[in-house]
Image (cartoon, rainbow, N blue to C red):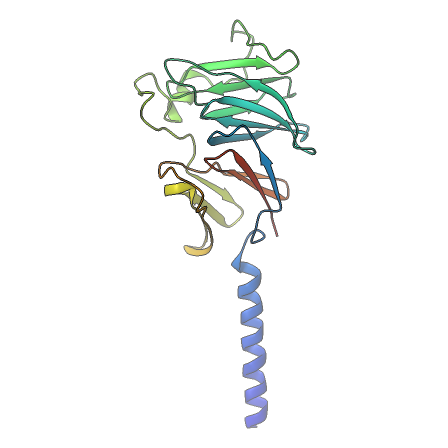
Length: 217
């Protein structure tokens, strides 16, 4: 009887340990891949509708990369109202255009094929309107010397992911911290890591120009 009870306890402990291990992390422990951009702070990310290109918002405009090879395809300058940081970046529905939005909410659209800015936004109804941009915290009342971030948290299934000082990232499930990422190389305490879930990947970025890919479990 004692042997059976002990065996049952061991089996129960093993099942609980296995369950805890399975739920402990949403993604693999170390980055599976890195794309190195121009040495600048990565503040925003977007994947094209076809899943073949990555748009990286930096504190010096934005850059477009081939997602498979990691090769830089194009640079999009941004310099509006005294600020050069693209806090929000996105593709249109077919990936032919991109939009960059800075601290003041100024929107700039580029033609991906030519790399040239569009003279008008009238035909680009897909671009967030001023009210939506203001809701992001990007507004004419902001100063270029202050720091404004479009995103500080994201959700994926049962998980909530948030970013804090020095770009640290915390994964929580049901109020319990399951995983934490820190980047000792980060020098800027105000850096907030972009948080992007795409297909089987969690993608983020550092203040020294690295875009990091973590494989989701």
